[in-house]
Length: 390
Image (cartoon, rainbow, N blue to C red; front, side, top):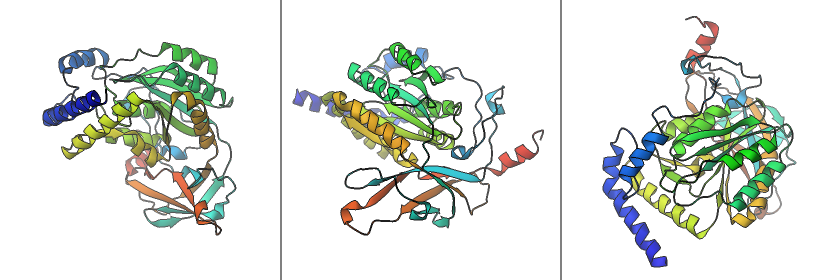
């Protein structure tokens, strides 16, 4: 069995190299097709992923610095071109502080214990709290690829995690492979989400893992959250951490959409022998693809950039793992500042938070998990606010 796995992996890698340059030039897709399935996949994609494939939803109002909104977003109707972008000054981010060695969450810090920098320039922290904010959670479940990550044990762990949410928290359910589909919109009724889990699309081992489309559509839909001041979280349940970009929004566009939505990206990986093999193969082939400039999306990279985490454990242990993730999301500090850079240039600005270290033992060193930056407002957005008829 082990030798067959090695031969299979070798065949995948060799085939990927052979087809990579051809696939990267395709106007329909930016990644290679699985060996022997190209014609079938083309037919599947034509049916399951039309050019405008996405779930039905009302037009979205997207603040440029979406993690800074303090007022409910206006409800507008019209074409997507009618989206309103709000230019705001206050930037708010969540930060989680943990002991590096033990992973224990530290929850007794004060504002004076933190130093905040934007593009290397120190910023003044004007807002600070450790309030328990309501959560807006999108469960994003992978239905493609060789392994089905959503087994009965994973479903049970998901339901257990939903039971730990508070009445003010809201949850939406999405599934994806070649395209993303909204199964249940935001709501606070846990029974509704539990019932929706019974209506997930069937697992399709011939389908792709279109991370770029999944993250983009999840970020777009996140702007319908009813908790404008809450924590926004996208939790992906999948067997792998990286994949080639499919047709539609690029991985970079998906990344920007996630940053603008103010979402924290997290991942749950059920650890099995088959999962480790599939994930290892995909890490290898996407790494090779990077040499040929193929576009890819990476769950762990996006989690790191947004201050989230990717947790992996055996399916029978995921109850505890999922619960730990929910607890981590709650015990975070809210830190706000007004940037000293008042340019409205729409650029990505790097953020760094340092925390005072304990003077006792070196093994108590503290680490901060937070988003690595945000996208500044654009001047055109401010002008549009002042002169909406122009």
